[in-house]
Image (cartoon, rainbow, N blue to C red):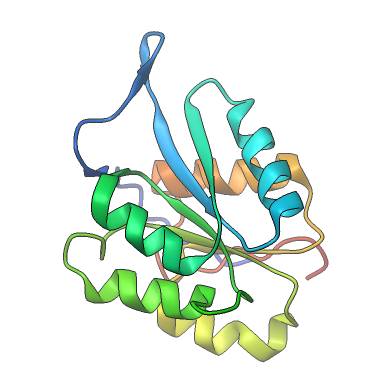
Length: 160
């Protein structure tokens, strides 16, 4: 596990943040082509009082929604998806000045050693290996939102 000591607050991309109760709510689109995985991740993150997760079916749909809606604090994305992979998704997010600062956490079943160099180059804030522990995944999301993990500082979990 490698973590950065950078502790800056990352701004929400888009319009004003949502509010649930007294605190600021963080929006997290969960991008995965597998409906079951997407549902599990959305349900786990939505159990947190200050997180609002919404399932997004694949990278192309994620790009459309981010362009139309904005107001996102972090993207949680699978890497191996048809059409627009997680690698292509983050490359396109980084190429757009409006979404370039957005932290992205990758969730992958791909072999860690085979993709680590690509992950570092792409600037993922963290990478979580499947199968994952939901509590650990939530902790990684929270750490990235706090700025405890900066893009390019990999957080590997679940079997590394």
